[in-house]
Image (cartoon, rainbow, N blue to C red; front, side, top):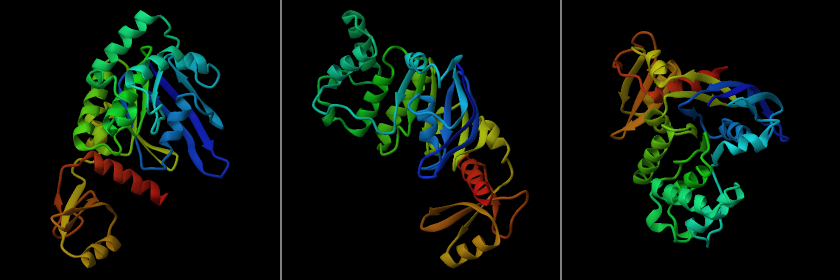
Length: 293
């Protein structure tokens, strides 16, 4: 399975340039698309999922043209959007049967076998007869994955799946995605750096509709080795002074004090110490460099 995105651009009627000549290649792995809210991630995911057309560019999914062969692409695609609607009073079991019929799985025995297996896989078997309106956020996301896996798709797209989940539900969901990613290609679109760090063999960073980086997390971290420096400052005045003197890539609160992180080939000043680079450093450095351009 491969997804090849070439020169994709999209401008909405209100003038927002959601995608600017984006080119990206995704292979047989868990692929993370990382970027802030409003970066263009959802626009890109909706376009790959055949739900909207770009102004220019092309997308090939396993040799199929997404723009001209939408029905064929949908047969091999599972999609969990950032927000998806369901009939709240219907049980998870009945809703999956309804969606399976809509996907063309009309043979009752085959449909039951598939849905029962999906309910077990997503750990929803015990609550399969409960109304979807009673589900927690994490349960709804696991149901979303179950419906996305109907008809055995070869490509799964999930858009901001862990936003709003508590830590326990997030872990359950990431474990589920990890198990799925061993068998099919998964594109994970998120603004949460840890989701990509924990799951994805390859990644890309997008901001303001532009592709900033593509590669493996290991490669991205290696490029920053020995170039991330940290210092804890006690006061807001000291923080503002340092911000005016050097390009700070991120700031965190540690015990009520500000820890600042700076990208530099050598020590940027007194009190700075070299620290291990993190994927968060990669993310914020790319965003800060893009903001300057």
